[in-house]
Length: 311
Image (cartoon, rainbow, N blue to C red; front, side, top):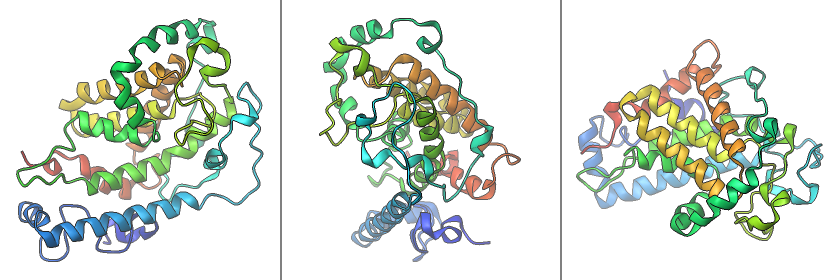
């Protein structure tokens, strides 16, 4: 049976960019392989494998549907606020679908239902920006950065005795999962088409609301993509490593909160992302609802205790 990276080369690169525990050159045993990675030869191999993998994934990312798309959705999100790079994300077909979008439901929550003034809440959170500045800026690079926060806070990116962090397997899992969930996130964003907090909260001075910034979130606010991604990985980690449940969920909650502190999401957006993540992970973990179950199961082994960094 082919390993998943060989079976799906358009996502995982050509054979040779295998997980950090299976090196191909000479190693089938994990400890020896990790030690080899610390050698100059191993470092060159690892960087080459990682570069090829990321280039391959980026190629899939760029291969969005060529269908014409109307960037104007019906709602409070201004048409002028759309950033070009986000207009077609809802059209992309995942290389490995892990659920059917039709099985997801996302109802309005929080102030979208009860009318609570969440602008006032964000004005209070605004006072915390200076103490969270570095992480806010780092995570503003994209919702996929939220996955790294959860990995870091749960110790999955810890370095082993050789000083090497075995992350390629986690990168594969991260890339495939985000590739699978992102179109659904953007389908719901376009369906609701709700404006960012800075549209209705004039005194908030939201971070990243300037359309000239590279980390400008030029797409509707509901649901929060950062919260969705963070909670998806938190729940996947919990499923494989129950002992990490609290750390994983705390990390996801912190990611969501920092987006609120930055003034780019309401609390209701974060709650919606959490609800969406719960549904997604439930469907992913069920062989009956995951159309790519075998590949997913293989990828998910990156979270197995046996695959954790050596301490």
